Length: 146
Image 1: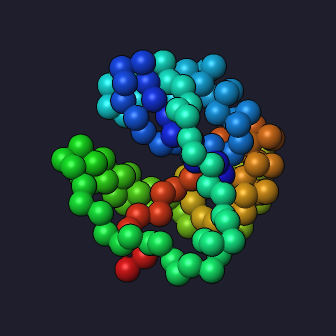
Image 2 (image 1 turned 120 degrees about the vertical axis):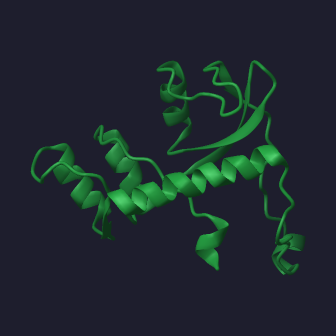
């Protein structure tokens, strides 16, 4: 998955995760990407600094800054994400590492249609998307790491 910094024509900045650059372009052309702040579908990639690891950073200790204070909009966004993740976990079958295989079976009518979630490698997700199987990442929330 690739994380892009995005902006809308209203000047809002936000992030989005995509299987590839082509996946972003396809979704944008189809009007599937919208601004979480104002809802517009006029969204573009923002200029991003590359994440290059230099020899200095390899030797340096982790730069994880730990907890971050969130503004009210981001607190609300995190609450909505938690609600969405809880809803998926409460209403879908966890299929573990068999996610890619099961998603493909459901898509092609070889297994009963139902909501599922589980784990898949980047290559498995890309292959599913190329086959037209609609999948999306389930965000890992800070609470999941505690």
